[in-house]
Amino acid sequence: MAPRIPEGEARSLFLKNKLEPLVPFPGTQKPWKSKCLITGKTVSPTYGKVRDFGHRCEYCSRSKVDMEDAIAVMKNKGFEPLVPYPGNKFPWESKCLKCSRTTSPTYSNVLKGIGCKYCGKRAVDPLDAKAAMLKRGFKTIGEFPGATKYWDVICIKCGKKDSIRMHSLSKVSGCSYCARVKLDINDVYERMKILEFKPLEKFKTAKTPWRMKCLKCNHIISPTWDKINGQKRGRGCGYCSRVRVDIKDVNRLMKQLRLKPLVKYPGGKNSWKCRCLKCGSIVYPKYNGLNQGQGGCSNCADYGLNYTDKGFIYLITNHSLGAHKIGIANSYKSREADDRLYNHKMHGWETYKTKNFTKLRNAYLVEQKIIKWLRLEVGLPIYLSDNQMPQGGWTETVDASDIDLPTIWAKVKEFSKVTR
Image 1: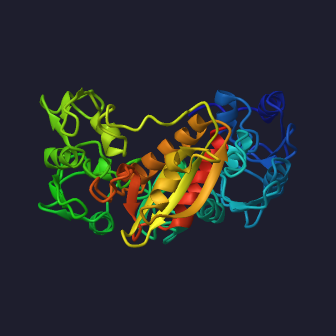
Image 2: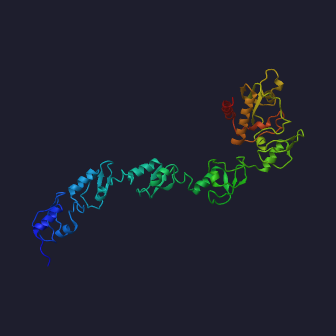
Image 3: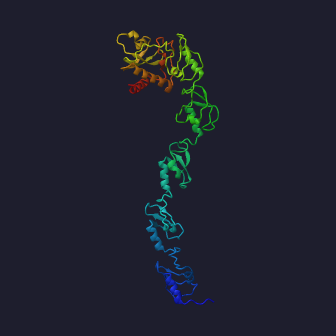
């Protein structure tokens, strides 16, 4: 049997370890009620534990917490406890004194200096998350799942359902459909109707050529959906946008202009060796220029214009022919027989508007912009033939039923502001 330790010797050991016994020594293995000289708390360590491990205050080792002390620590760290102390390692529902949000940190984490998860941006308040989503254009569905998980939303812009992560919201500029990452097949076919394209096969992918018929020009084309719905929306038909040409259309225009090609079609921007069937001359026009209303044979063209002298641009109409025409002429006071506008009046044309220029060259530049706008942007072809206009100028005509005079003249004024 182990010898009994004298009480004086035991008391000296406790005092050495900052513990003051409050009752007589009970023995080496029984709890000995004492006062911790560090915290002032009453504790009951055994003699053996203190002898083997030193100071054994539960409060000093934080294995035990006094309620009042715990509340004081929480307030000092910026938290107002809302429920009784649950334990050192259990969530403790509290109110953050800085952001006023309810959170549940553990007491041990608070002691380590870990603060409010919302203030520290380690968590997102569900109400804040919902407001942030709404600001970005999304109406949320269901409860907030967390910042890193997908949250079902409705895109306010397009009305489609999508899934967005709050964590990635700063990188999102719109829903997957608005950003064209995802496709709604119903939207695809609705877009085809608007563009007047008739699909001839089922849709595969956005990057796969899709065989279809353009209902405007009746050509068979195979653009990709990315091209149809890209930056140049509605430019999917190469024929309508004049990126491509149908050789039948080319030959038809050459016949109208009475030009006979002597070599194969070289492309719209290249000179094309042809023979003028009016005068027999060899000429080198460009198809793009011919298609925009420029004359074909330079020898047959009227060179009675003085581009350095005064002149004007005119817009005229002929009710019997159902046509409008843009043109230019020099300003004459007495030589009416040489005045182009006078010659058109003699053939039943009526003047709508004229605009004077100090130099005819500036009027010419405006005229060319108008012709290009009519042919390329509005999409109106040459309307009359040379037989219908023996006085010349038929290449600058358009169908009066397709566009009105005020619309054309508005463009004349717009282009005149740019061309001085």
